[in-house]
Length: 305
Image 1 (cartoon, rainbow, N blue to C red):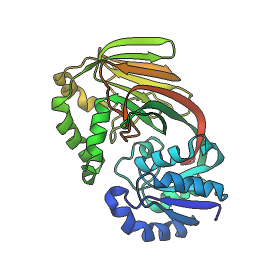
Image 2 (tube, one colour):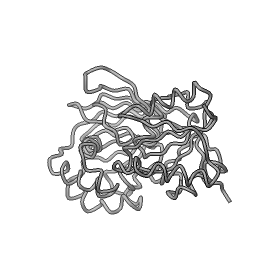
Image 3 (tube, rainbow, N blue to C red):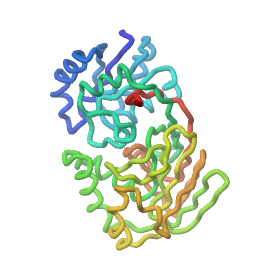
């Protein structure tokens, strides 16, 4: 196997990547980025392919997919991520990780970043939670995890609204979930800081962007060794609607029922099991613990001037 391996999710971007892959490969080659290609066949397969590539001596993994595809690779490799460098050719419904790191969507430009970009060592998170089969399990995430309505919305997006693009898919899911959502009493611990009360959402963020472009944690730094933990308290639906537009600009933190804590370990329990989401995927429920693992994801990003 070659030193550079493309990991391709043909189901990304609403399935259009399958049709576009020959063109993507051609444009990448024109830019000088060549290597073997491994094509996933079903959900979760990308993680297996990533492990196979690393075992076979690959040094650079080039993901052709979106945020969900990245989540598969991160979970496939875990802490072994530190053994390789990762580059992205964005093809996905969600693009929050891509937006965070300013990865170009044009194939030729993304290929140049893969070849000549700066190498940045990023943090990842590990979640320990109750899976839907009732077992206590662990998964990793690269950008953000949430407890509350974001988990329910993520499940709704996964159920079939991705064809509308990032914002359209998210908006439709919100319209479906939001009217029936009720805030729940949550017990939260971030390192040695504790909070308890009715909450709408708790997000443990590595990067600034989530939910198809919302700048929910505007001060998050993806290599500072800390989560930015956003607490949306007992907000009314009217409050949320009035302030929704602020989340796209990152100006919502001044609201009196919004708070941010920072730390490496996060523990969340609730009166009733709440859905969680990891990089937009919805694998289970609370109780959940998030642990920050510093500097293991080596990503090619645009070179600084």
